[in-house]
Amino acid sequence: MLPCESPVPLQVALVAPTRAILGGQAIQAERLLRAWADDPAVRAWLVPINPEPPALLRRALEVKYLRTLTTQLCYWPSLLRELRRADVVHVFSASYASFLLAPLPAVLTAKLLGRPVVLNYRSGEAPDHLARSAVARATLTWVEENAVPSRFLRDVFARYAIDAVVVPNIVDLGRFAFRRREPLRPHVLSTRNFEPLYDVATTLRAFRLVQDEYPEATLTLVGGGSEETRLRQLADALALNHVRFTGRVAPEEIWRTYADADIYLQTPDIDNMPSSVLEAFASGLPVVSTNAGGVPAILTDGVHGLTVPRGDYRGAAARVLRLLGDPALVRNLTAAARESCEQYRWSAVREQWLALYRRLARPAAQQEGSRSASPRQHASRGVH
Image 1 (cartoon, one colour):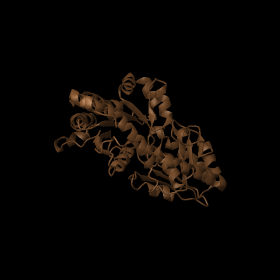
Image 2 (cartoon, helix red, strand yellow):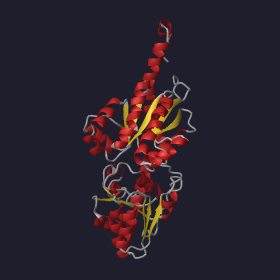
Image 3 (cartoon, one colour):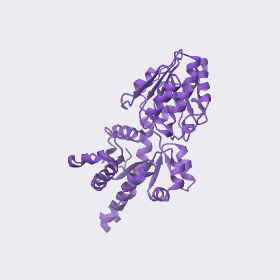
Image 4 (tube, helix red, strand yellow):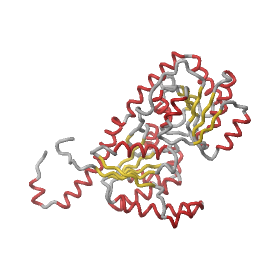
């Protein structure tokens, strides 16, 4: 602690989804809350964008449009109640309609209460979203700070003259333990949800070509989503063997799926800074990925893993087969990938968040102090 720092912890409200909304935002928010839990510098708490409604209103959650209205009726009052006691409001943000329903109300409420906001934008859909939405661009310009998890998003923001600081995702290197795969087996893993932007169909088509060379090859698909039925039908149409749909796996258990696999394969069309790739790095899995969005910001082709163009299932299969035939390449890639994970440790990421929070909280504290101090107190203050 610096000599002039107050021992009182910073009060930080994290506005983010709970795990009832499965996805990277909820997982990263939960990791951040857990990391701050025993830290004397920050007292953080969750303000859920999907609050649990009172019992009388829960039936409304079963109806699509009533669900949204009910959630908003509970969300806005919770913002007024919870943000007023914060020194800093840390708002997690996705894109499109979600931006209007979750981050925007939080920003408006924080501004009403005079609380500084760091808007933590995390969507790989940013290029299209910002091009389409003047409201999003204005909001990002209005907040005190923007934080993004990758240089990909920082560069997207820069196209609209919007500043952003890069604070990466957190990886628990204790839970995702590194292990060398020697020999490397054709046991392939994907942990992307079954939604169109993740293009899991290309993963299945690539696996068909891998299985042509290695009939004993396995593919484990962890996740769920709107395309599950179509993907199961595609697996049948491709006459694939040894494909396992596990469903969703709790974040605290997901490390087991990495520990049991040998190769990580993902083929998204849109992406930002996927925690799944970092978790594969930490676990010692060689990674094959499309070069979508922010993936090249964390995975340099030929250094940390292998990349292919989006939709290129033949290329993805060829890269997996290359890994299976080149143990020296696997050793080099996995060693470099694991080394890169050091920057995603909590000890490194903590300092970045703490510096950002203090930078935002200090002007507000000084402003309050100047209002409350008498002229004599102002005159008597020394420099520490």
